[in-house]
Length: 101
Image (cartoon, rainbow, N blue to C red; front, side, top):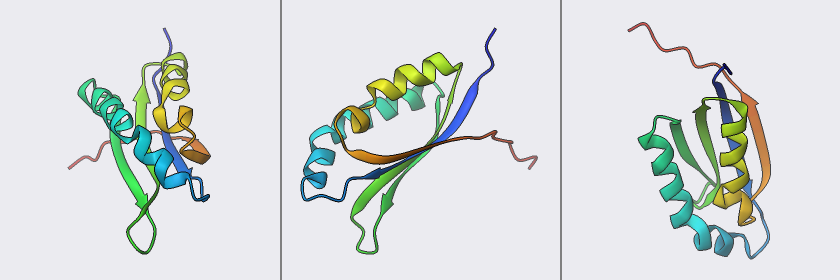
């Protein structure tokens, strides 16, 4: 049996003039997918990354999938990836330790 995998996925949006439009075009689909992940306990946390003026410039998600194949299936279908929103993506393996209090 495979061991669960956890990652912090940070995606920075493109900086070209079409970037905000690409984000807006797939945002509802991205948020619906994030809600589905939260509903089944895969999404640990998520945040929009913003610039000094409050405009969204990226996203960060802490996810825990049952195995690498499940993570890859999500990653390959994530609308911010397939829609060309995130242009600089970092995938950092993590291990979440629950607080004792």
